[in-house]
Length: 230
Image (tube, rainbow, N blue to C red; front, side):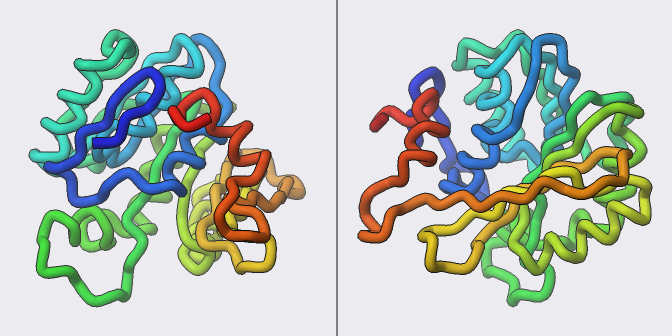
């Protein structure tokens, strides 16, 4: 269980648990009242709940795994944001929603790693169910003309995904490179895409200070509306 200021995430039925990079992802995404949002592979429902806390939005949260679907459904129904989020137990390739203002996804990224003995974790972490190619095509088909897509990936996966998105007419507009510390290499990248091809804004974001214990001021500021410790 992971308790936030305004909601609680139960995660025992999900292959992928709450992680600090996904929390940074959800907190970093800008939304405004009235946005129509699609959350692909919602898992525990974390990202949908984080975005619903920000503004009066309508979110379609899609999850293919049955156990994760029931977990997310329970987390959402127990939150103050139940009216803002509709969860769907369906393969995103079969889901017919279109014209979203924002699409968010923390996709499976261990494309070539060895499979885990846990088949549910495999589905959550690997690309056997949803390849980058299919994901890029799906986002392009479901995004509105002026919409944005936000994706969280490791740097190696992101480099490939940026190319695939451009093939589908969506271009990198913003990137946040997440580091544990300033001296470390990025561990994850948050990328935003739109149909406007222009130079991207790129920034670094550090979780811990030089002592590798204290959270940076930027991390505390970003997470203060969510983390109980701040």
